[in-house]
Length: 169
Image (cartoon, rainbow, N blue to C red):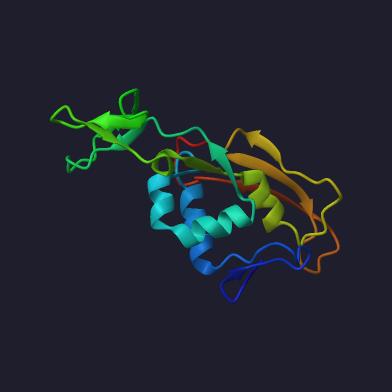
């Protein structure tokens, strides 16, 4: 699945190759409580975002309702609201001035974990129409009996997120 730092598959030659930095970013996001990417994070990782979008591993998620305050060292969340005056979204600064926020900054994407699992398992002799069964919503999936390597028998495989977090499962 990962050859020379690139995430590619034998059975899906048309799938875009994901480079090492993109895979690292994907894994970092998968370890978050919710596998979401904010507009701010997307702005800082444009190449990785483009690769994940091209590979169809992201789906649109609900927009941000808060944005980190640029005035506080602790990044206090500022509620985002609509302004008829500027006909856009933004927040009130500590001085009471409305600060508009560009729509891309409020956009969010969710990692499509089933798509990631299909991509990960595409070399493993899967039956047509295969999909992983969620066992614990958003945390644990039964991938099924997979043919791994040269083994004749199939092996039961599960995929889990955040195993290090005692509260995750």
